[in-house]
Length: 536
Image 1 (tube, one colour):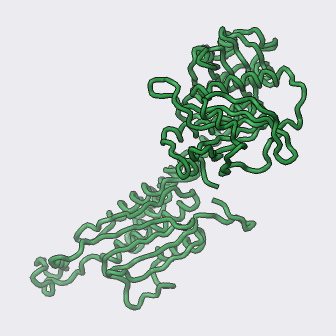
Image 2 (image 1 turned 60 degrees about the horizontal axis):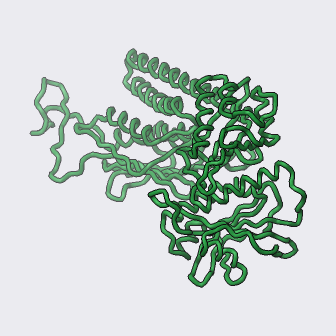
């Protein structure tokens, strides 16, 4: 099904600002639907002949729907949309007419013109119509709650027709809470409570207000109830702002171990401030869970920090041991172990600063690549370059992948660009420097004109939940007798074990298209649990 924007752009001549206003209405009209006990359908004119297209629909949570089938995308005309034509052409709310039948469901039609106010704050032209259709099959004598709901709904409907509802949304706010059923308080122009729903009354009792709300000055009550005086003043100022016709951001009140979220909306039908609508929701349990998650998150990050410190300690001990070992082979093995441990420590260091069990992997790759260039034994520096982005990776993938890339980068530097051979002075030739009798000196090759600069390129891209990685160098390439399946040193054995085991991927070592060597990895980004189910 196409979106509101798609339908409007394809079938109408509405401007982008008009479509944005319709999006704001569709994002906030569940409130009006619940207060009205009615379905809301957003209709836009398609042609000058009176044809209308439904671009959005919302059903009430407080009453049965009038439409069992989805109406979005439906184009209608003729007598069926006469009420829409009146609202659109005359710019007024249409409430006349007899009930209509949709199958075996009787419904009452209403039509509310939608205006977008101009930059000067004046009511603009009608750009759409909201159809308010009420299922009459369960009609009954309305209670006090229903009467207050309907009265408030009429005020908001008039504000849609005036172009003053919905109010501008504050940055970072959503439309998920609170809702009508969570708790509703209606205020008069002086800020006194004229009606409070049972759920609203219960929410205030949890804050410590045991008596009835009707007749209370809500701004004063918020100041009195809040445990934090600044918080109480902030909540009270929100109520006063709504009474002045403004739309303040949502606010929370904490008192006696309970937390309540409030949203204040001005009521200004025909531009006249008559009071405010305050929606409230008891979010005590939500905040308790949030605090528990924050504590857990802090604990997990502290664990990663300690693991990083422990790994750095292990690396330092191995480094000290390497300095005391006289055998060159043993020293090299210990130094390689230091680099492997340090690469894992990088992941835990990143996780200790992250709010979840995922890491931005590009920075880690860049640091590992920079460290790999430091072990180069070539006469010229080996350049490192990254193409593409790894993005955010789960911790279990990142930990294994960083070890794999560390080994591949070190292999590319050490074996793709080996050090110059050492020969005796007599065999050194003109490029070798003379030395003492019996010594050996390196022969430094003279670079040919136009010879490529030593370079290793790490490439990454994602495709269909798979991460494709290549590590390519422009060095001397693989030996002629190299066995891609079994050959290689300890580092390549570690790489194969991690890729096929921990990462459940594949690896291929091959000659590069333009010389050198290329290692190609394909790693799935979905993890399979022990019971065979896949997860992110």
